[in-house]
Length: 195
Figure 1 (cartoon, rainbow, N blue to C red):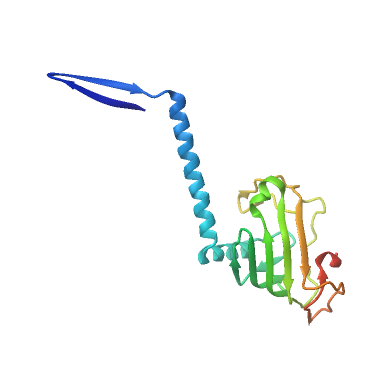
Figure 2: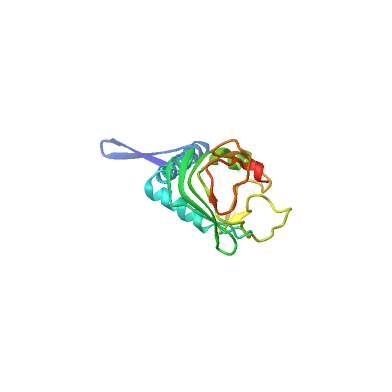
């Protein structure tokens, strides 16, 4: 980009054109692009922590349809969706659209921004006072398939499909008995005891 500098001397007018070095111009444009991208990311983070942003996430969760046929619906989300959130009125349905589990509150402590670099980082996932109604009927899957989908509605994940999933989960207390189907539980033990 050239800058014009006009120097007037009596009747004669001299125009001096100063050209910036191409590297200087490139650095300015790269800086501007990075600044705009950072502003967009900041705006997205702020939006996701508003009521309409949380509702957007609730709608996205309801729209996910894995090959197993599992459907999850969330009533509302409180807290920061990027760090610590509490999901209320969580319902799980199987491939036949039969409700098999309801959980009034799920506490989620995670770091989604780490996913592209080191895998899914769920610090803790705590289910409070769930009710198991029936054994779910899920579609059989490929045992060699990745844990996370390669893409969701045309959006490709930025991470390789074999990224590790780090999670610590529990369901209210330390007893490891499986609750009878059709009953309410308030203490079930660690999630891995049901494997």
